[in-house]
Length: 463
Ligand SMILES: [Zn+2]
Image 1 (cartoon, rainbow, N blue to C red):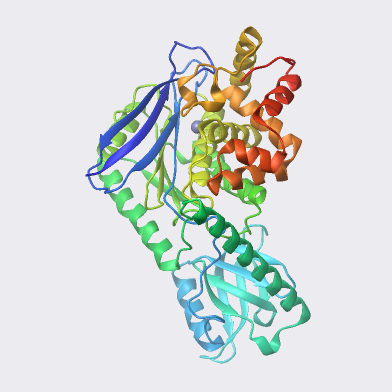
Image 2 (cartoon, rainbow, N blue to C red; image 1 turned 60 degrees about the vertical axis):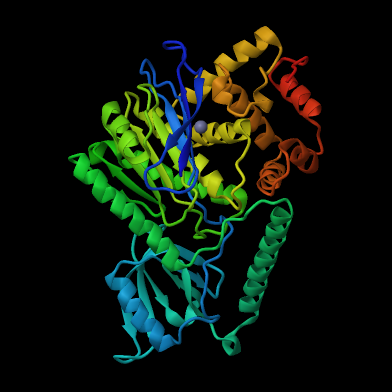
């Protein structure tokens, strides 16, 4: 017996811009899943458009996971060269760390020169994310090389320089730090997302592909665009979605930077699948067919967090391209936070607050967050209270709550971003948020509310 846990939120009142009312969780039978999927949806008001945004969480992989390696040191150089030939043919992703400390992630191998026909690699010509032109790398300058996120080569010990040793020490320290938070989480009964092999990543991507085939059979005109971290399947004309698709990887990179996740470290299980439709009716049909959910007309998008760790986000275009872009990063950030470190969910106000903060940071052209914050501020000035947002299991059930969550998050991040990350880490390890606040910011809830209240001109603010 399986069920899908589904939060959906919608606009309670017609065109009360920025306010969301949730209709609560819904339990639905899922056809082919044997575990609980956590899906959440946020109603977003697209100007004059009864649209709602939903987020879902992905299935489990570990944010701090390092590329796994079956054999320390990886392949011998000649074997590696053959493996690279295959990677080139199949356009597999390469992550390379140089002995200088510089690293290149998400590369495509364009050419491989070998020493002799079946000899070791000599030179690699790569298309990288950052450089506009392809670059050439001397094999001797490489410290580690991963194909499909699996370490395939490490510079031999006898050739290690002082700098190699230093970098190695750093990666050892990172592994130790991981072991420590894993132990803390497990002590509190929280399961860390496992580190995945490249086969497991590949299997998740294949699962996405199988789902895409079914989607294509049901909806004509669906095309697939790949980014480094997302598979975007949509019938929206490509020239309309290009910049918005790019914002997805920016969300991913922003959170990696904030959490101190080394570039190139996998967070998703495989990739996050985003399915975006032109029409609301198509989105509703998709939800019904693939997730057995009835999506109300004003739900903008839904992010399904599947217990295996796969994340599928579905949505439709709406009328405002900026709000669409904001919704995309908002929703997928929920998925990222689901996949970060452990399977522990963030409290609703923390999750929504961060999603809104990310949406506003990455899509400043959208006024959606500003509108919510203005509505929330008006409400707080009227009541001198936060309407129980901090204790709510689903803040979407509280009108004008998103603006409270986002401005409080911005307040915490601006106060000290490092402490904010410690705050999140504590929660992901299984601490109650109040306890994590105490440990990171050395503040009680009352102190937080008072300081936040002062910052918005309501010094007598109550929770
Ligand atoms: Zn949300």
